[in-house]
Length: 140
Image (cartoon, rainbow, N blue to C red; front, top):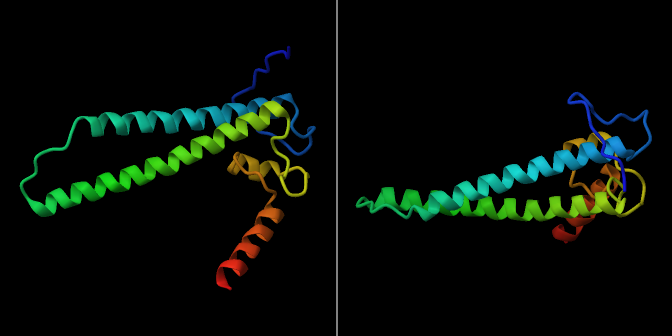
């Protein structure tokens, strides 16, 4: 069993330390878990608001506006649900030891990219290549 790693609140992963050492793993685990917790709290709040029921709004334009707001909120929550599943996948990769490595090349993903987008599975170069191929395929 691994010893628990306690991080200083000011800690940020640095390029001059071994890639995905215990401190970096703990940093990203905390970052992903906090992100997931925030998303789930937002989802619970949305569910509570929607369970309060719809108001009886006599004005058709006001009712339509409220329904549009609700639809937008549901689309947002659906995107967040998909994001939570990506966060869960990143947490699994952390446990398996494959987090931070590009799915295409197997090379480490830059720490700056991981800090900005901890669910990233491709290095910046591989992501750009993927997007170029996608654009070419979409445009043909």
